[in-house]
Image 1 (cartoon, rainbow, N blue to C red):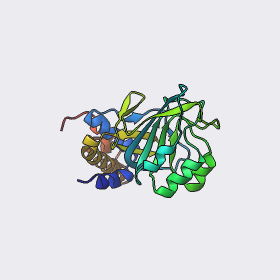
Image 2: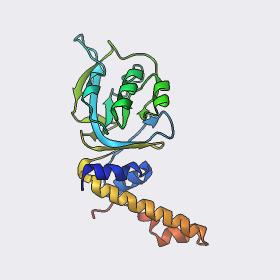
Image 3: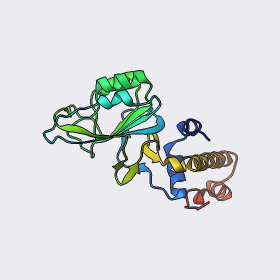
Length: 219
């Protein structure tokens, strides 16, 4: 199955179902502390990874990597969780939206929030702050694995983000995790339907195996 097909399926799945599916296959993928600027923001696509570090006296650049990001990607920026300087602003939002990039996830903060809201460009971060990262941070890696809260994100892993937060699905597990998440969504819908037609919640959950949906399984 192609990555495009899987991305299209992930795009309509809530991160809650995908998180439960990751639990079932025994993979940690939830990126704690990252939230959207607006609750209706959603993003899904292969990760394009970027890492920043504090300046060290060498010439520094901020943001020029954007020219190399394929449309449909989700940019994942690791600024080591810093909240005192930004690594994403209005110009980058405008360009990314124009280029068809699916969204940006920042282990750090962003600024020019109004541009993101105006463009309806999905941004997920640890917050917002106005101070630029120019002359304060430097770009040290593009297209290499990054680690956020102990979770490794490799280029091409699939990112899913919505009002509940952000997670990563390893590329090798994407098909299996997606199928499990779809089943979880169906079971939860069946439970709601049953409860709406006379069943008690306890009966419906027992009937459809709710309590074992996310229990780890090797199959």
